[in-house]
Structures are given as C-alpha cells and as structure tokens.
Amino acid sequence: MANGKFWQMENIIIMDQFGRLVLPGRIRKALQVSPPAAFKAEVMGNKVELTPIMPESVAAIKKRKGLLVVSTGGKKFNAAEVLRIVREER
Image: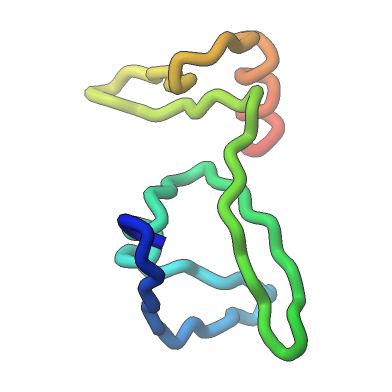
C-alpha cells in the first residue's frame, strides 16, 4: 500500500533446482528491502504471501570502499554476536 492506495505488481518468478526464488529488483525496491532481509511466508489457498519483517537485533554488515561497515538502523547491537553470525554464514 502506497499513500493509502493499494497497488499491484506482477512478475513471473522461476524456482531453481534447489527450491530458491529470487525477488526481482523492482519488487525489492518497491518493498524497500535489501539483503539480508527476512520474510514471513503464508500459504493462502493456492497462493503464497510474503511479508517483509524487520529483525530487531540483526545488524547488517556491508562492504564500502574496502571497509566493513555495520548498519544498525540506529538500534543497539552486539558486534561480537553479529560477527559470529556472519562467520557462520560463510
């Protein structure tokens, strides 16, 4: 919903051999999400509804100009815990 009005965007999304789906850039931009992002998935009849959720305690680590930068959105975080999570993902 934008400015109190519902809008619709359609795309064909292909699932790969591992069951992964990729949201097209224009959908990610419209939802204002970027990696890492989390979604709640609900099955409604023969449809799947994805709703972006904002994790409260997860900070995003991005590489900018050769440096690792932690973006928290102004929230407190535990840097050691974030690094542990990032290392486990590798």
